[in-house]
Amino acid sequence: MSAEFWEIGSYVVTVIGLPMAIFVFLYEQRKERENEEEEVYQLVSDNYQDFLRIALENPDLRLFSTTETPTLNDEQKERLLIIFSMLVSLFERAYLLLYEEDMTPKQARRWNSWEDYIVEWCHKPHFRALLPKLLTGEDPSFAAYIEKMAGIASQNSLD
Picture 1 (cartoon, rainbow, N blue to C red):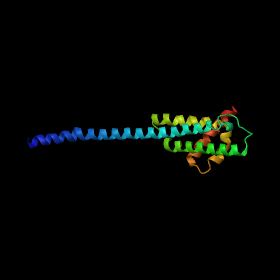
Picture 2: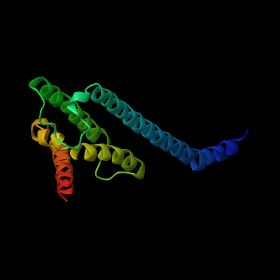
Picture 3: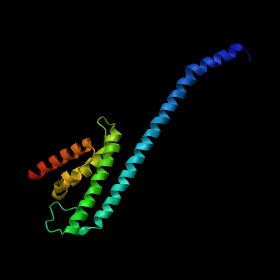
Picture 4: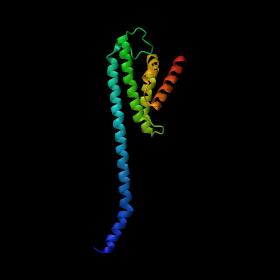
C-alpha cells in the first residue's frame, strides 16, 4: 500500500469520520441527558404516589376536601401540618429538579403535570392557609412560584 493510499484514507477519516464521530457523540449525550431527566421525573412522581398513599391513610384529615375542616383536634392538626410539609417538600424538589424558565416541549410537558398538582392543592383552603408557615425556609424562587399559584387559586375560588 502506497503513501498516497494512506493520505487519501486520512482525508476520508478527517472529512467524513471525524464529523460523524462528533455527531454520534453529541447524539448519545443528548439521549443520555433525556434518559436522566426521565428518570428524575419518574422518581419524583413515585414520591408523589407515596404521598397519596399517606393521604389515603389519614381520611379523618379530609385532605382532598375543597373546604376547611374546622373541627380538627390538636393531634390531627399536627398530622395535617406534617403531611402538608411533606407535600411542599415534594413540590419544592420537583420545582428544583424539573422547572426551568426556558423549557423544551418535553420538559414543559413533564413540568405541567407538576403544576397541575400544585394548582390542585392550592385550591384547597386548608392548604393555602398553612402555606406561609410551610414555606418558611424554602427556596425563595419556589416560594414565590407557589405563592403566585395560591394567589391565582384563591382568586378563582372567589369568582
